[in-house]
Amino acid sequence: MATTNEYAEYVMSLLSPLEDIMLRKMMGEYLLYYKTKLFGGIYDNRFLVKITPRSSAMLTAEEIPYDGAKPMLMVETEDKEFIKELVEGMYDELPAPKKKKK
Image (cartoon, rainbow, N blue to C red):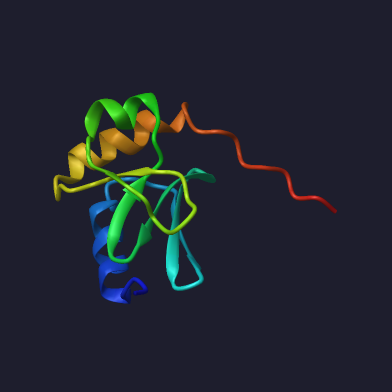
């Protein structure tokens, strides 16, 4: 089941306190970037973030986004300030974007 546009818009509304958020559609699902770093995605109408020390301290529900993928953590709150703190706290723990080969 692919993510609906309505759910993607809902997640973007939860992320609205953050600047520099980018949503990228990929094969029926969505990838989420903060200041060019991939921090999570929307898979089957589930808002998931990568596992980092910060996200592990703030969230507990582990989910597999799709077959063969690494586990991620589910965001199960509508508290925009909590989500802002989560994403900002994860930023320094995320790897830098890979350079594109020419």
